Length: 398
Image 1 (cartoon, rainbow, N blue to C red):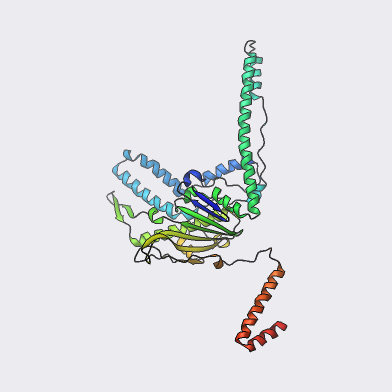
Image 2: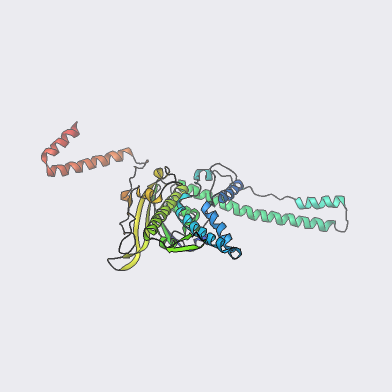
């Protein structure tokens, strides 16, 4: 996974993400304070739980495919159609899952791993055996071998402890930096803990920009046309597989829902990982620019997603396209008749996001700004109408 980190920005290329990224749930922490070892066991348990039913079904079908040679023609046909339907299900359910929320304050309070102590366990067992069955010729040899085994086990435990302590220290330090609002810490957390192994199916790259501690921007390119099947498979009454070209309108509908599902998934992962209020997501795709005749990355969807709004959604029942298009956005996801691509847009930017004043802003500075704006407005009005200027002055005196 190639990556480039700049000030406030992170660019991640996902071609090799499955090798270098963490799987769903890996590294996630429960909110209660616990020992380091207990939290690691909780991580493993969470990882097992967080497997979408569609993914489980996919693995089951893959195993059955290996046994296809042993199946009858009818069973093979059913398996082929089920596999096709499952592929669509996986694509269209990507928005239904997310990682467990990270509680960075609780992570700071995690207890460090306990260092091991030397235990003469094997030596004690050897002396017990010798007490029951004395052997003058082998006594020193058996005890020495047992002591060496105790030492090896202690050194192995020390290596494990050193690795665990380093990981604990690293995570605690990262948690403090995130709570302090350090932009580089936000990008480090994204790089290490957002599940790129699954998201690599979305596209070839994802670029993140931290504008401030509450707003994150993500720009990613999508390869949905390659991910979506171009054919429709069904089982005929005679038990054979029917393969037909997918209708254009149906392809566009699936493509729309897949794109919007990816947008929602990225937003859910970002909000689960970081203490954000809003995320701005822009989606690019390879499209033909009819003005130049050249193909290139073109933005076709840009949406502002507040966390407060996202938290109200029922992801098991919503329609991804309807949900995304109900928020502040650019792009109507209507395919061009000429090229079949979505129309390109001008992406949203920070000026399109309604921002609340910083809690730390001094009230006096707000008043000074308001007075300055009022003075400028008064001067502009005076240039247009002396009567309006007089009215403004009278209102100001009141």
